[in-house]
Length: 354
Ligand SMILES: [Zn+2]
Image (cartoon, rainbow, N blue to C red; front, side, top):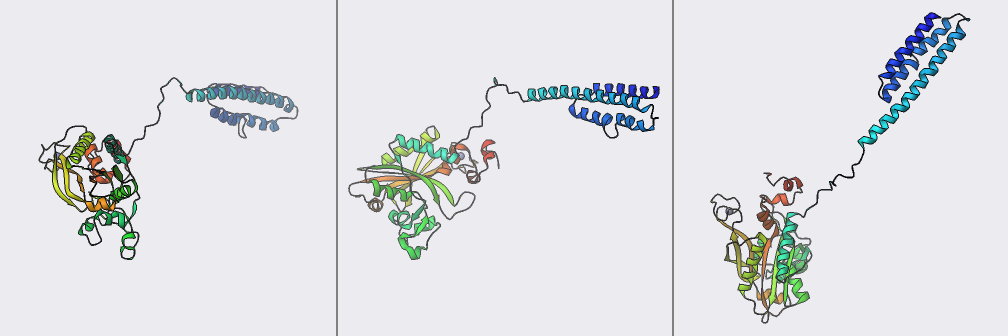
């Protein structure tokens, strides 16, 4: 018996030591297995009962059962204490500090081209223009013929596009992706008549694809039709637009040019917004000091008539620019493709991706 008493005392004290240093419910589970599991210390003792004589067995059995009850009770108590502590710790980790300032979400932003469009439209609205929109799938009639570009006209070569029906079959009614927003001018003249002041922003399409040309790009055109419109009004409006858009007074020059739908036709250059004409190695202006930004001219009487307006009574001017190019110039974007390839990180990283 004294042998058994010793063993019981030993199991008890080693259990208490182990339990004292157990700090997690997982550790406690291991402890339980170590003493009460199939090969546990107490289980081994219980199994040894069969080696005792029938006289000794009942008392020894009682002692061991008492020990088992005690160990189980201690494990259960300890388990409750540890679970409470672990729950409290987990709760403390998850605690929400309602006094912290909100972190919020990063605000979204307009695409640079959309932003450019809004800025230009806003300046033109200040000059009394309204916004007019039209279909991107357009008829040959509105895209070319009304704009003084009949099927044989060589200027059509510069605006080769994507046809949705065979031009030879459908003639002037054949469908194509518009090559400029000018058909919106025709549609607006036919719908609203004169006087008229509109800007037409939108996507246009041409069969071009290289680092500086995309088969889809964004254009904004303006049209003013009134009585006795002079070239000086056109000039003043565009100078106002460019200075307003770039936020300072820029040198400008108007050069003679050619478009089938205006007569006379001009192009507007502004001083290089990057170097101001002071850097012969400038990449933006290629050292010329000037940037081509806008085509313009007095609307050809043929086009005024196509719009259902009497060119003897009304005249006007039109201009057009690439919104993508304007965005690139204003925001220092050095490759057209960044505007369309969806690489948001380019715009978040200071636009230094080469
Ligand atoms: Zn320059």
